[in-house]
Amino acid sequence: MKFMLPLLVAALPMAAAVAQSQSGQTPTGAGPMQPKTTEVMVILTPRQGVTREQIMAIMPSEIRETVKLYLAGKIRQWYSRGDGRGVVFFIDAKTKDEAEAIMETLPLAKEHLMDHEYIPVGPLMPLGLLMGAAPPQK
Image: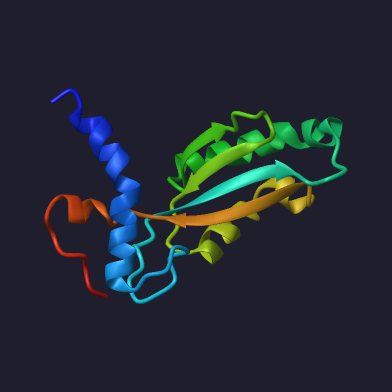
């Protein structure tokens, strides 16, 4: 039993490849079978040439507005990047455009000080294969 979790974790990339090849889904997620988007991960980094002082001048209002979005349920999780170069938010949105509309309300975005990378995420579809279920058909 103690080896089951590492085995499952190791098998996930292979299960993903099998699920994609069986469904015709490409590694980028394009194709007939796409995971349901349940939230959008947003990675924020300062734009090239933006100084720490510019960001810190906006930070008090950025924090207030971010907390408001969190309390409204729009931001589900937020983290500092491990490399110290920004933050990662998980936004309650079903599309990149919906997440972008939420993020554009924040002061740092309004001042064009941050770059945003939007990545829709959802349930790990190959887990169904590990459970013996057929991949869902769209």
